Every structure is written in structure tokens, then in C-alpha cells.
Length: 188
Image 1 (cartoon, rainbow, N blue to C red):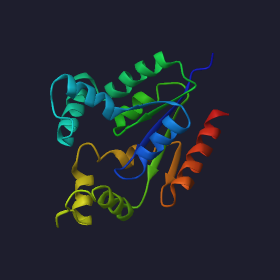
Image 2 (tube, helix red, strand yellow):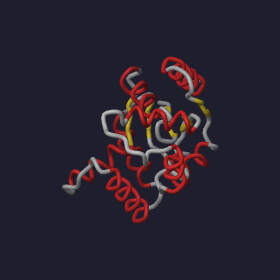
Image 3 (cartoon, rainbow, N blue to C red):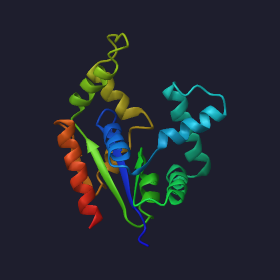
Image 4 (cartoon, rainbow, N blue to C red):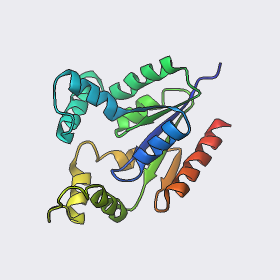
């Protein structure tokens, strides 16, 4: 039996990773795992607030520092192995060590979802529309966060090693069509 096709998703915040993940998991029926779900499970087990993104980042960095940079990929791949699926999706690859671990698996293909920073900032503002935005949520601040947060800084470099790069500047339908076309090419 052929090993499953492993689709890794990498992308900056508000690039469209989550909607691609939802599309592949729910609409296409692929087995799908998020790095953040694994981290949240651990935080819940420890009684730590999962709504605080800082807690998630600290947990991820602690795991990487203690067990190696590819620990999250290894853990999710163990889960994927028990799923016995034809296609497995991993969302949240962010670091070069995770990419290195991901590439050890046969049939592993990486999709980089990206968009211009101004568009991603606008999307982030829309997402936060139910929260009172202050004057601090500027484009300049958004860019600075991307350039300094440990969870964000390696994403463009990892994206340069992707098998497919998708510029998400259009509709959801156009995005899904590009993703589906990439998976069809990978499946041949």
C-alpha cells in the first residue's frame, strides 16, 4: 500500500491557512491536524488558558527547545499514521527544523499560502471586528510583530522551500481551486 500523501500548509497570519485547512479537512474529507490543536491539548491538560496566544507560543517554544525543533511534526505524524488515510493535512509548519522533519516523510508536499502584508493586515482587522480596535493596530505594528515574534519570523524562509506557492489575493473559490489543482498534481 502506498504511503499517504502528506500536505503541509505554511503561511503568514491572515494569509488563508485556516480556510485552506477547513476546505481540505471538512469539504474534501482528508484527515487534518493542526499544530495549535496539539499545543492546546497540552495547555488544557495543564490547566493553562488556551485563549492567550502567548501561552501557545511559550508551549510550542518549550517543546521545541526540550525535544527538538521537529517534535510537533513527529507527534502529528504519529497521529496521522494511525488514521490510515489517503491524504493527511498538517497546518502550522513554521520553522526550518519542522520543515526538515516534514521532508523525511515520503510523499510530503508543502503548500505556501501567502498574500501581500497590507491585505493580510486588512483581513486581521476584519477578523478582530468584534473587538474594539485601538490605534495600536497599525500596519507598521503588524509588520513589526511579524518580523519579531518567534512564531512568525521563519515562515517566509520555510515558504521558499514549498512545492507550491499560492498568492491568496482573490476569492475563496479561486484559492480552493488552486489548492485542489496542486493536490491533483501531487497525487499523480
